[in-house]
Length: 522
Ligand code: TRP
Ligand code: ZN
Image 1 (cartoon, protein in one colour):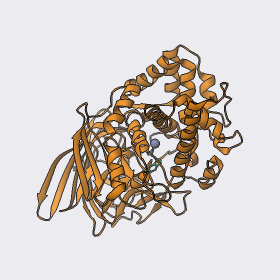
Image 2 (cartoon, rainbow, N blue to C red):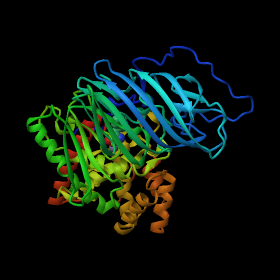
Image 3 (tube, rainbow, N blue to C red):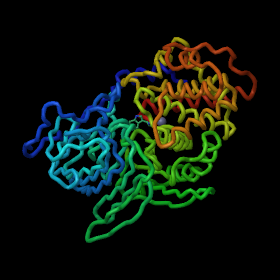
Image 4 (tube, rainbow, N blue to C red):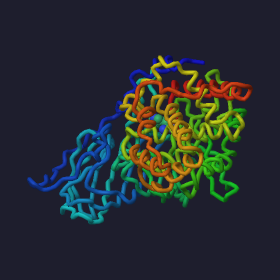
């Protein structure tokens, strides 16, 4: 197998802070911003995330975004009207939104003209009257322009993310940065909200998004697609994808409505492989429900894009976005891509329904989603998590830099390091072996149900694991999450024919994970 070291070589400087490319947000005219009086309280420009101090904002909580946007694929211009319903959590005379690029022409708060200033990705809004703590208010922002993109640093050639114009429309996916480039937002998973999208495109183009398609309104040369995502959603999980889609609406055996949108340019063997993975979504959800508890949302599905330079998948809520590359190996041969479906659907529980409260806890997303791949491998008869764990462990020598990543606090450069994924899954298997199967699945199910619709942190997960198991687990978690070394494993790698098959499965699996992580992210 390829060594983890060679992978690390490709990922040395993976600075997730992101480089802004494209147009900067110059305002057409200066706005007389009414300053707050000295001593008057202002909302904070950040929500308190150590890794991303300016992400999110303080002083209010958003309930709902109504995003009425028109996109012209000929010019890439986005014209937006955002209506944000929120509640003040403290009394403020001004508050911030996160917003980059795009020119603003109007802001009102509760129908009254507001003034604003902009600095980088902070938009500071001063309403006519200060907001009292507890007050519900509605912000309206009208804006226009070509959205800026983000890139994932550390990759050469660069990998684009965010609001991406593509020849046949738009793909919207990024983590953690994407939302602020196409709508004004409290851009942190701590402030989840419901969404309604009304996306207007030239007639013939189609729009796929999160949630449920409510209506398509054709008027003149344009059509407006209304999508509603009623379950609370973190801002980076919002997506609108414009293109020419083959839509497949169906239900799983359990009756869950599915909406799959596959780029109609995807044909032949590749298309057959993609369709066959998508057809297994019901079965995947069954396996995941067995381990994690009920699927948390009212709809599911996939958006599979033909875009050549889309190098990742993302767990966009209810409807993950997938690169076609998950069904192609590096030589361009068509391969089975079921694993990425398992991964993104597992994120619906861990990442989406139970979201991060701070970005440093990213292993809670990626470790669980990777562990789900091991559960799926077992379902497919390719080896048990215990076997895959040991085989993977044995494949990565103690001296490999893989083991140096402290996955409980990786820093933004290593936020999506392969160790966050693989060692994250190993941590869960180590926990399972310590507490036993019954307690383990009880912990996982309780984590999903008790935090449903909200957020969770690593210390909270550890506390729950200790409470459910009745065991003292700080040493285990210290070793697996907070030590930059290869933990000692007491049980040797299994032997025999079955272990052999698990070993070859995991070598192949690890190779694939590393190849994907070298090319992009999932
Ligand atoms: N969380 C994504 C997944 O597991 C992968 C990912 C990491 C990503 N960083 C990203 C996707 C940046 C898009 C942009 O599916
Ligand atoms: Zn993931």
